[in-house]
Image (tube, rainbow, N blue to C red):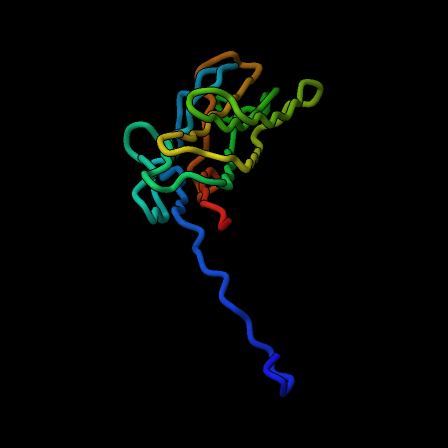
Length: 165
């Protein structure tokens, strides 16, 4: 206080950047049945450091001078092939440097469904050059390659930001 009962606060400083969010601009179709497939988030809502590649690798790469702790989140609207109610399993997977880091899976074997929005999140301590990407899995009874990740209403998205330390 300043002696008169007024409080003052010192600014903690810092920003949660780099930060980005991307989503599917249209549905990703032809998703192989019972396989983990990279989700191609092709539309950026924002990208403060140009660190998310929305056209070829579909991944976030830690830029120079930005090592530290990051929070990532993702959701994938997984839909069974041919619009049928035969989805048996769905997962959302966070990959770090090409390997599975976090895996969230739902199973519907005894009661197949048509679609589900499955989510995942992780906090990671990253170095410059590390990269993060999202994979998803769909298994339907049809055993075809007609599963999809929906691009409607921005239901399939991926984002992250550096945590102020």
